[in-house]
Each structure stands twice: as structure tokens, then as C-alpha cells.
Length: 497
Image 1 (cartoon, one colour):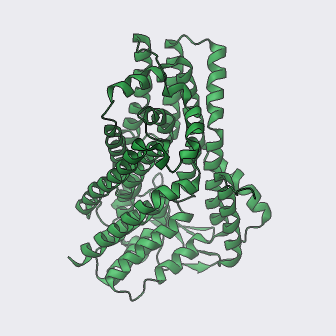
Image 2 (cartoon, one colour; image 1 turned 180 degrees about the horizontal axis):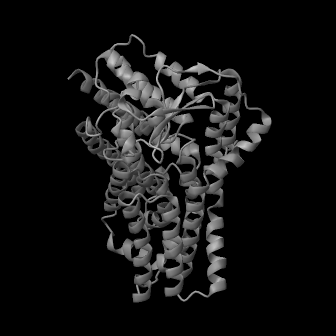
Image 3 (spheres, one colour; image 1 turned 90 degrees about the horizontal axis):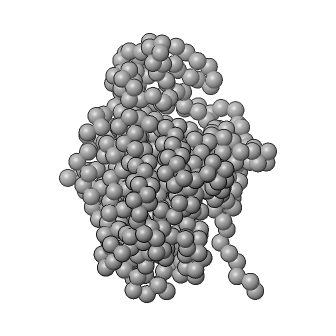
């Protein structure tokens, strides 16, 4: 009998989308009223089942709505998304999503995720141009020679730098750009592709899980909880440092084992396939000429400029895409690539990542089904009620699991924060703990599940490396269990001591 293969990422997501559509027939539709600050007009807009009410933007209005958030958090732009109003949940007319909605959900998802999809495609185009110039080959050859015998530095450096980006400005979607660049480097260092994947994805995940000054999670969640973002900062910094150390040790132990005996790799049967995919980069005798060095500098600057722009100047996808496009053009000029060849090579490079872009769109389609079926708020309502009359130690660990579960349906950290914090953070008052613990549970719960969340970025990342989701689970689940036990211990101890 022929051995059954594990489904592709696209199939997994379509199955999840189908199950989500079925949920909309089972879970009652419900909505919380929402409150939005209109910066232009200087007033609040309360939305109730598609009805709108203009309210005066004052602290008294917030107090009357039982929203314990300082008015300054809205007026200075810290909270820019609609927030849920506590105690306003009500059932609404059911909107079950049928076969037609299921079929259209990936298309809607692709439209909603157009920004990140274009980022991925333009990165593919830039990589195509770089491969054409053969500058990658020379750079990787030089790096492999330089790091000979000290390859473990790659693991520490890559994981740590990406974790710093994750904890400071939420480096996540942007890491898609790093896979085609770093995988050949790790392969040249005699590691497998799983090590490269782990350093990038786990680095990003542990960084965002333990966000410190990340405006898209820790800051927006603290604002929505009505506390200062520095409250609980010290514990998150300690959690980040220890969590990162655990991850680096875990990855290094696996990498050392694979380097010593390649058959120990969880993707050993794909070794030849993956190396063929990056064969132009692994074994190269290209030399670092001045022109090649100049191209590599321009290429590196694309990412440095992107990181600086996102971290300091509030850039988003449009600006990032523009950086990669300009970078490709400049590299094309330096490499003296003819106009026709440049366009053809750029388009082919973008096409190589089209499958990844489609996966991102299908994953977003799951959220579309949830929103259209109006069951997200219902799940939030029942989750918040589940913590009634709990011991504070059990309460905070329950919140950890609740946020992990909710992130399957709401993978956006900022979206989760503004949707749930006004509802969940007051629950901390009832059990006698600080609201910063709920913020921590939100971050740790979402972050832990992000390691394996199929509706997040992992399937898109795996598609670039051509690694199956089952192989990733086999590799990462022991680490997830270690981090889960450690996180529960930290949350419990921090509450009592």
C-alpha cells in the first residue's frame, strides 16, 4: 500500500476554513458594541449593530461606559482601532457561512492580505535579481570559509538579532524576506534547512511572545487595559532573556546532532531536494569582487533601511515594498542587467514565491469567515465568563490558554489586544491581581501558540523551505512544551510573590 503523505499547507488551511465555516452554524452570532476615536472630528463613535452614535470624547464618557482607560490614550493616538465596550455583548441574527462563503473566503483573504502578499512577491523579485548577479554565491562562499569551525555563531547571532526585532517592533511578517537568504548560508555550514527555519521563525516568535516595547502588542495591549506600558516591563525583559536562551540551546543541540550525523535530521529524506533548491548558492567558487561586494552592501542596506523605517518612522508595507523595489533596480544597474532581462528575472523571482503568497491569503480567509459569521465576540464572551470565581493562580494560567486558543482565530496581536483587553483586563480586578498580568498572559498565550499556529505565519514560512507542517511539529513540539511549563511557572510565581 502506498504511504499516505501529510497534506500540503494549502490543503490544511482549506480544511481549517471548512471547519470554521461549520462553527458559524453551531456557535451563536454575537457582538460587543465598539468605541472608536475620530481624531479628525475629536469625538467618539459608538457602533451598535451597524448603528452609530457620536459621543463626546471625555473621561466621563469612558467612565460611563465602564472603560477604565485614560482619555489621553485615545487623543494621543495610542489606541487607534475600535475597542470592545464591556458588558455590551448581545446575540445578533445568525450569519452562518455556507459553501459559497467558504469558496470565496480565500479570495477575500488574498484581497485583505494584499499588503503582505505584495511584500512577499517583491522580495521574491529582489531575490531573483540577486541570484542572477551571482553575488549571493560569492557572499555565501566567503561566509562559509570565514565561519569554518565556528558555525554555531550563526545560530546565536541570527536567533538573537531576530528576537530583538520581535520584542522591540514586532518583527514577524518581515522575516519572510530572510529565508531565501539565510537557508543557503546554513546549508553551507553543514546544517539542515530546519536549523535556518528555526533560528528565524523561533527567534521571531520568542521575541514577539515576550514583547517589551513592541507598539503592536505590549504597548497597545497595556493602553487598552488602562495601564502604563512600563508596568510589568521588567518581568517581560527577564522572560525574553531566559526564553531566548532556552530556544538557542534547543536549536544548537539539534544543529550539533545533525552536523555530526545528517541522518538525525527530521528532514533527512528531503536533504537532496532542498539542497537542489538552493544548489546555486551552496557550493560556489565565486570571488568577492568590488562589484559583487557593492551589490551585497546594497542588498543588506535594503533590510537595514526597512528595519529602521519600521522601528523609527512608522513605515508599513507600502514603504517596505518600495525599499525592495528600489533595491532591485539599483542592483540591476550595478550588475548591468539589461532592461528586458531585469523585468523577466524579477517577475520569475516573484513567481517563485507565489505559492507562499496564496498560503497567506488562504490563512487570512479563516479570519474572514469568523468575522462574517460574527462568532469572534461570542467566543470572547464565553471565554471571559469561564474565569468567574477562580483562584488567582488558576485564573492567570486559564487566561494563558484562552489567549492561545483565541489566537487561532485572531492571529493579529494588535487586533487581539483592542478586541479583548477592555473585556479581559477588568477580570484581573475581581481576583485581586494587577492588569499587567493579563497583558502578560495575552502575550505569552499568543506567542506560544504562534510556534505552531497554522493560521499564522508558520505555513507560509514552511512553504519557502519546502518543509511539511508535520516535520515542523515533530521538531518544535518538545520546545513548545518546555516553554509552556516554564511560562506557567513564571506566571504562577509572579502572582504570589
